[in-house]
Image 1 (cartoon, one colour):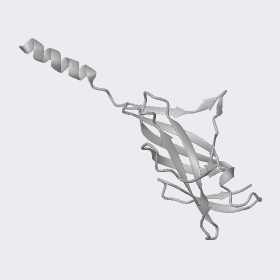
Image 2 (cartoon, rainbow, N blue to C red; image 1 turned 45 degrees about the vertical axis):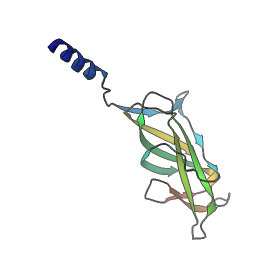
Image 3 (tube, one colour; image 1 turned 90 degrees about the vertical axis):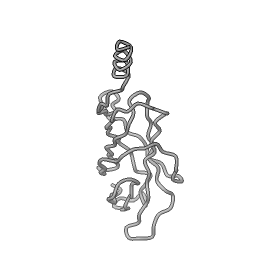
Length: 146
């Protein structure tokens, strides 16, 4: 009886998944992969994700995210609302969509994402400014079209 109990306990111990932290950065030929932001209606269908940091550099939005996973490929989209507030400067809501592909693994993934946000400009004129309000991020991001 003791042997069976020890066998069951040891198999449960081995079967438990450990939590690990994975840091990823998408690269393609030693260059960062740039995803393209697009203007369309915002979506309610996104898997859990946490925005750790967000900043605009030129026409690019750099977002550091964390999420659970590790067994499946995850994909990301950045969507900007077609509606713009009439404030000065105007404000556009943007949303990061995360598709986990039913990944049931529990590793903490930290990933840097890079998006071209030129589609989110107010006017395609040099110096045109707009605030981007990223869902899940408290601060508005000021974007000035170069």
